[in-house]
Image 1 (cartoon, helix red, strand yellow):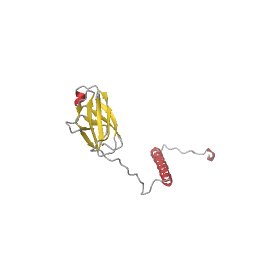
Image 2 (image 1 turned 90 degrees about the horizontal axis):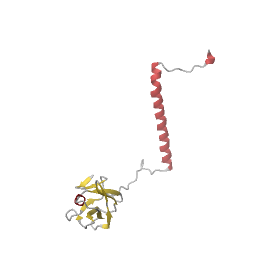
Image 3 (image 1 turned 120 degrees about the vertical axis):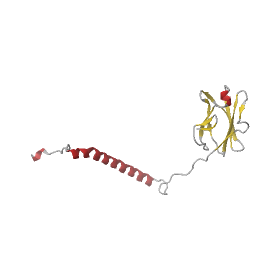
Image 4 (image 1 turned 90 degrees about the vertical axis):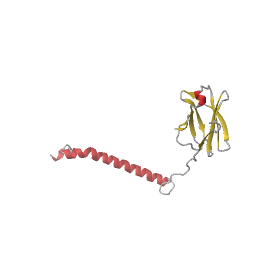
Length: 157
C-alpha cells in the first residue's frame, strides 16, 4: 500500500509492536544511490532512534522495521554520501495504531476444559450430520430410480 509518494508498506495499518516492510523509491533511489539508510524513531520525541541499512532491489530500497510503542512512526532517508530525503524538512510521519488486546470470549465465559469438550462434541456431531447428508444424497437417487437392490437372504427360498 502506498501511503505517501514513493514510500510503500506491506500492510494497510501500522500497528505498535509489529514488523513492517517498507519500500522506498524516492529521490535517493532515483538518483542511483548505492546505499540508503532509514533513520527512524517513535513519537514526537523520536524515541528509540535507529539507522538501518536498506537492501537495494529493482523495486527500490527495502527494509523490515520492528515498530515500537508510540503515537507515530517518524523517519527519513540518507545515502552513503550523507544526502538526505527528509520530506523537505518535515520528515515522514505516520500514525501508529494500538495493538488489539481484547480476548475472544464465548458466551461471556472464558474458554475452559469443559467448553473445549463441548466444542469437540459439537464438532463430532457436525461431522456425523455431514456424513448422514452425504449418504442421503448419494442413495436417494438410487431409491427413486429403482436401482437400489436389497440383499435377499437365500435361506428363505
